[in-house]
Picture (cartoon, rainbow, N blue to C red):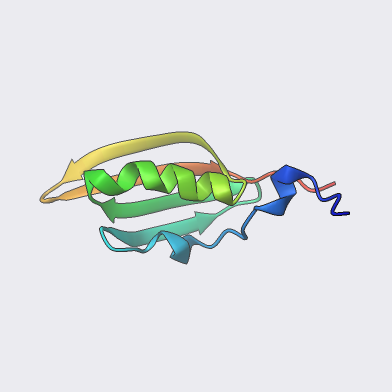
Length: 85
């Protein structure tokens, strides 16, 4: 019998490179002890899937911003990872 809690069962490891997809380009990743800041140049259509991707990795968003820079949409996220222990 598998007794793994559901929340741990489907959690994927976090990598900022997982967010560099069609329609989204990684601008930078600044890790910190609590999580970090991720910035993407993205299309509007790619924004909702970023939140899904983060949830699959058990990473929460404490704040985010969307801003237009020239022809690009800059999507900046402040991320928090769960503390072990």
